[in-house]
Image (cartoon, rainbow, N blue to C red; front, side, top):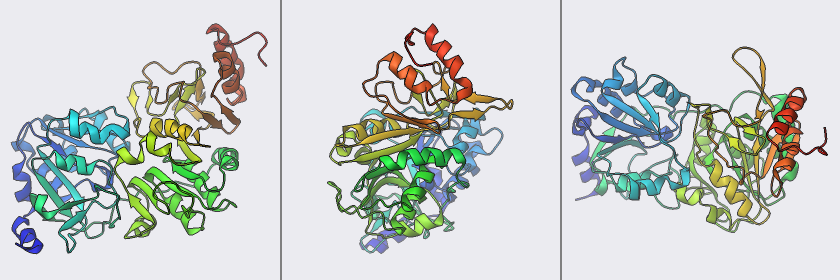
Length: 447
């Protein structure tokens, strides 16, 4: 039987496909831009027939239909591997939960720790001449989900870019249970954010001079990493390479400016490697069938042993707050969950293992509270319930608009002194007093 004959044999409507879902099932929507659309609508329409259907996803870009009904939580429970603003809304609704993870371990969770997935449904590209559907912008852990799935339903979207991959970027029609042809919506876009703030620029001005020619870059999401990327695009840096978890618009800008060649990269020479991508149409057009980029499973992109083989690995990420001991919180405000550990800890450790590598955690020194008062992001100890994304033993460079400190090798009193030195001046005296109470401030410390 030819691939096209198999395709036609397995082609069904979304309504027909979701009949396979039973009460009590574990259903996987996979990841980010690959979440299903037509299948999600069809599953939501079956709401009153189902109960205790448990659904996994992550970095959710739009509100799933299964979460929209007022009583949706009586029928579906959402589980997020990494929270976006949409995931937070689902959790606040009382029908969603976060699953703690270090992103590099996620494929192994499916291989070893989780029960088989009853049904997986995801968007893919159209089938090629060899019977393969490409995952497009999200390689991540999708192959490992499919390998453990009892039923695989692909929802074809002609607008999803086809991305070259290391491995684990495609599924063949032979292994697909059903095919649904979607409405070919535009790929969900993630805005590049507004114009950089003065604080973003101040932080970028401290970080960019630390990046050597030939460095390999990883950028997190957010205003500061984007500003740093834009500044790199306008700098004199050359022959940079990319090995990152998330591919964002800033990399496209750097490539367009001729800054990225990958010629000195020890692994995957000349290729910009990433686990998943999310950005504007500019990004999706750039990565479509582009031999300069390569999608790879996240247990490769985020493996510290892989990063250690790439010289001058530069990791740049954000934080919510940090304390005087050097603990960094990048995922919660107290017990209110915001994002997740993701790959930040992976890259903080991996960059330091690289010859010449550096990890930068960047943040503004203050944030405006809901009550209109200015609050310090540098605190004596993390707020009760806040998560230590990066333990104090893993911090390298910490950057605010007031300066940059290297925590490696510093004692508790040295850390306190250095960290307070990059706090907002209005909060330094109180932080010194707090440090004294915690016995991490020497009498001879600078005031």
